[in-house]
Length: 130
Image 1: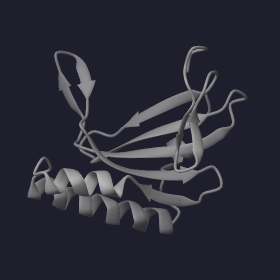
Image 2 (image 1 turned 135 degrees about the vertical axis):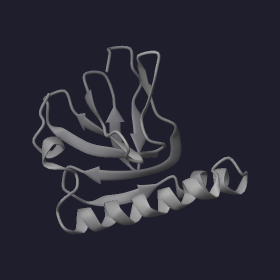
Image 3 (image 1 turned 30 degrees about the horizontal axis):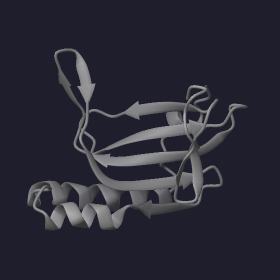
């Protein structure tokens, strides 16, 4: 994050300020992306999990559609779901179709299960350092 960046806080955790590094992990076919956040000294701050449409490639560009719902996993392993009201608002507005809602629900359940078993975040994310 560059020197002109402003501080970003989510769920009471500072996720961005000058000198922070974000590593983004994308998983083809999965309904999530993970941003691991490191402070100026390279120490893990948190893993921020975006619930999103699976990764797409168009004209050599990778993208995904963020569906508002996020999972924040602190460096201490404590986790909380964020922005549930935003997600529910999108559902109520009809911008997230029922098939996507099912995939989101399945993904949330799978992530909660994997976290409970100590399998999420995956080892490649847990051991990565900038």
